[in-house]
Amino acid sequence: NYTITRGATLPNALDEISGMVHYNGKIYGHQDSGGPTAIYEVNPSNGSITKTITLQGVTNVDWEDMTQDDTHFYIADTGNNYGKRKDLTIYHVDKNFMLQDSIKIRYAKQDSFNKNKKTKYDAETLIAYGDSLLVFSKNRKSYNSQLYAFPKKAGQYSLTSLKKFKVNALITGGDYSAKSKRMALTGYLPNRSQYLLVADNFSLATIDDIEFKRYRLPLKQAQVEAVKILDNDSIWISSEGEGSAIPFLQKIDLNSLRQE
Image (cartoon, rainbow, N blue to C red; front, side, top):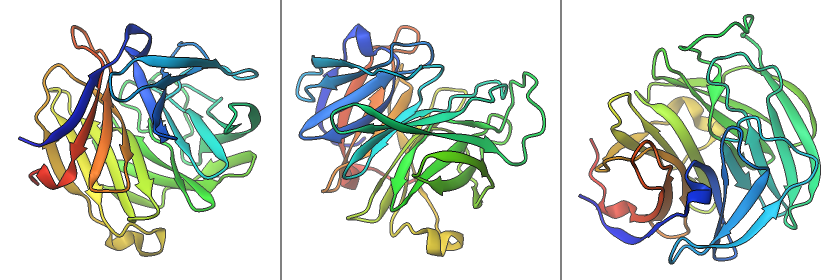
């Protein structure tokens, strides 16, 4: 068991919530593939949508995560379930939700774009880290995750893996706290068991020494899709409404988790 310090059911408009940030005391989240090009402001106390912000000049092929720094939000249109996409894009949006620029990415080692249900070129995370953006891959074949990094600046980047992490999970979300130097990832296995992976003192400079602690989340009828680290020892997670499940937010005390 673990300690839930707060929980809230999300409305149907966020039944496929796949990314979120915590900003000015509110949660901002979005839907995934084929959803509207909208960001929803959510009251974390009760899950209600307090504002819907429609973004201009963008498309939502498969939005999978969002992250932020002091000046911008970054939205990852990087979902690539079958490894077919050649239009992977990260949108730069200012804090007034106006589009500023975009980044195009591709995977340097990907030489086939034929449909592949076991592709290793899918990613559902986007994490702001200093002057860089980080992506952890979702690998349906090995359940490992490759870490990629690229500049926040507009451009086209060919990504080469910095490290393979043996996470034994399909990674669905991630977040990094510069204050605590904590990295957190969420993921699941085909049997729908849900996991949180946490690495303290995370640094690209010591990437070969980084190890993730693995926690199984005792959730049923859930698919955790996003995670946000707060300043204290707590996190927000969100789950989409998978099948008969109900989408929800939960605030969890990290100290109450038991490592596998």
